[in-house]
Amino acid sequence: MSVENRIVSEDEADLRLDRWFRRHFPNLTQGGLQKLCRKGQVRVDGKRVQANHRLFPGQTIRVPPLPDQTRPPPPPPPNPALIRRLKDMILYEDDQLIVLNKPSGLATQGGPGIIEHVDMMLEGLRPPGGERPRLVHRIDRDTSGLLLLARTPGVAAKLAASFRSREVTKTYWAVVVGRPTPEEGMIDQPLVKVGAGGAALVIPSERGEEDAVSAKSAYETLDAAGKRFSWLALSPLTGRTHQLRVHCESLGTPILGDPRYGGKKAHPDGFMDRLHLHARALEFPHPAGGSLSITAPLPSHMMETFRMLGFIAKTTPPPKRKR
Image 1 (tube, one colour):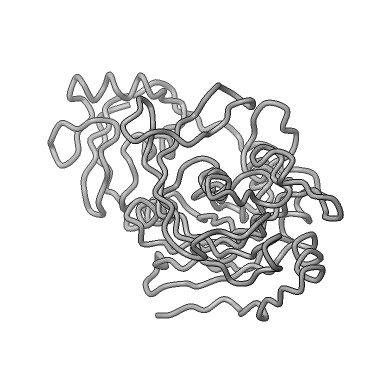
Image 2 (cartoon, one colour):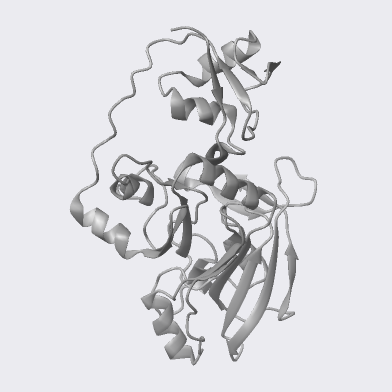
């Protein structure tokens, strides 16, 4: 194999160089690419770059001779039952992206003890001769609601950039035990992760504490059943693990049914013992221009709780694309 010069396509805008190589040369390891970058054998527009360099359309990538790059065959699709489940979750799709309404209890990605997850199902959405869709972000296993998929790496890079630059507006609905005081505001509470693996917890921390990260969430009380339960709209301004769950607990109003935070208070008698946190709405720049606003209907366990508490949600609006 001789030296090649390849042009970055429009679809590959904002893609990292290492992910570009993973797409075109899947047998090249991350360490191998970093070594080629250090030696200057891989260049972008004639300049030395690092593996995390972000690409722009029209740039030229110098690709030196590489080991055998026979593309491995795609993995077999998941079983038909899983594919049907995944397709039933689709709320919106076009030639750029897919939006799912993920049920509570289904993990986004694999991990210890996880047998089924969204990521393992995505091969079932690969079009003939096309790309396997990929996750743009994650939501907790116990959280229901909106999950965004990109059809190509280039679209994934654009959407990920929108998340990083906070151009994505995220709204969650939660039923909490108690009534927050004040009824709306901003939670500016740093968090720190304690432990490792599946047993790890996220807890509030003092500002400036070692390993603590900044975490901010806006909240608004939409309705309340006396002082016993409240319906909140939550907007995370940062994207920390379990952020909304820990922030609600820090207000003294843990999310109903939370299996990890809130202790006994989060599990009063008479309610379905499942997390009452739902990724309700997303609004974000569409990769093809304009914006997309989409809302996910409530899961059945939250609808039942709303009925019991007398909370009335407006009809879920259809997806709205502004061009």
